[in-house]
Image (cartoon, rainbow, N blue to C red):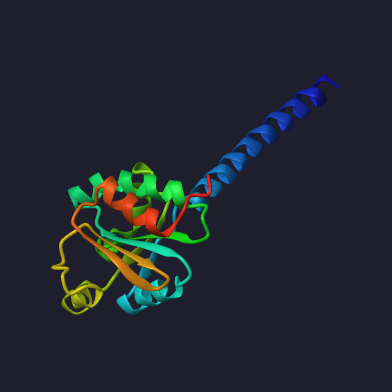
Length: 179
């Protein structure tokens, strides 16, 4: 009988170890699933997204992970996004101009910098000379740059790093926080 108890204890110990491994895998899978997904778009697809948001205010910011002013501006954008995110009339879209081969590192960067807005990667750098002036004739291609659309119309163009006053002034005209 005693050998049966030992076998049962071994089986129980083995079962608990297997369960711990399964739970660890489940938690890792859930964590990976929460990592922000980044869609890769061409310019026409980006334009379509901008056109689809015609009932409220859309903030579109062009940035890159290698751009120091972009990274410095990110907390202000996230503060704005946090303030207005629950309003159905507000959306923020961050457009990364990083190369497509950096796509796998982008979610870690977004997590590190606590980016909660939607992020897309614009994989159309070869046609920059076409789509940059299409976005705005005044835009010379520098980063960061922010466009604000209200009901489908461009209402603001911020060339360079935005200030909190600029962002609040623009947002205050078009969208009110629900909190």
